[in-house]
Figure 1 (cartoon, rainbow, N blue to C red):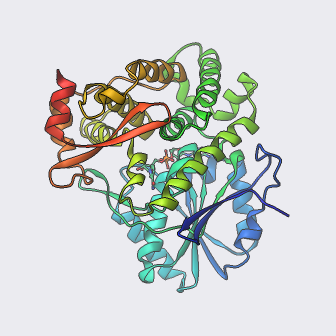
Figure 2 (figure 1 turned 180 degrees about the vertical axis):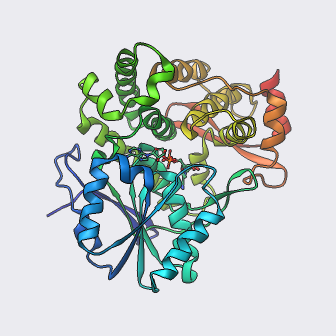
Length: 394
Ligand SMILES: NC(=O)c1ccc[n+]([C@@H]2O[C@H](COP(=O)([O-])OP(=O)(O)OC[C@H]3O[C@@H](n4cnc5c(N)ncnc54)[C@H](O)[C@@H]3O)[C@@H](O)[C@H]2O)c1
């Protein structure tokens, strides 16, 4: 029987798979069970976000199944502060204590912080053992758990240490998102919208439509107080909006399909994969400044602001402005705001420039800026940080 599965390839070879578990896949194809996917692995060791273990009923039932099979669990704290080498080394120590051999599979259950750290630990433990992911946030389902980037923060810089190495499989079950705080859901929504701005296939408008409805229901639920949104779960908002989980499931699969295609064509980011960094040069600088100043901002919120800045830059940059839809920045701004995402950069351009000049993706003093021309059409322009910031500052 055909299962819903998206392959990630290198040439003709399948190097990783995204498989869809749980219930409705949104397209009538049957879902697979996790137990089936774990069968080929003799030794499995699970690293789980402590928060997920506690809050997600769907994750609890996965954990119960793993415990029945005598699979050991190690809980980690998933914060940007704990996304560091100490936690990676603690995971490695635990694997050693468990006598995990070269045949081991490390199974990470959690959001992008957990999958990035566990994937990195598995990549260096005994010179690399296999690993797989069960992403529990929207951001991890559509982005962090697909494509093989692993790593940790170092010396105040995001994801400064890491490797690209593919998981055996990523098991996506939309039901795991039910307990997700709505603000974390929105963070993933920003990455999903980013993907559809890179490659639309008619999905951008559908995603914006659904997110707008969800956001207006979320605001009703919390009496129009933005600050209270974080206390809602996605399940509560979906129920109020009478939204279809099948529609969300479809959008998640479409978003993964785009990323899987890009990664299959350019695994190590020599060219096309750079497009997936849309908004991220600005977003990483915003996150660094937010950490320094103790401001509270999710990754997706920073990405949303970064995308709008990139759209503004596209309109100002002589190499790309003639190809650019001049109404794009305004359209994205209006759409993102209606979806509940921020659009204004909270920091000044000179402060951003200082941080961006240390971007790990800078080559020969230039950064590959990903600039959107229209929804579904982005270009890459090499600019120095000073050039880009001078254009934005005028
Ligand atoms: N590897 C990549 O390609 C890639 C891509 C994008 C982002 N990232 C990284 O991903 C990280 C952000 O990932 P994230 O947004 O998934 O964050 P996260 O892992 O911090 O999760 C966000 C919050 O949600 C909680 N949570 C997770 N799942 C839950 C659930 N089902 N129910 C209730 N609570 C839940 C977590 O405990 C945490 O408090 C960043 O560190 C970023 O650098 C990596």
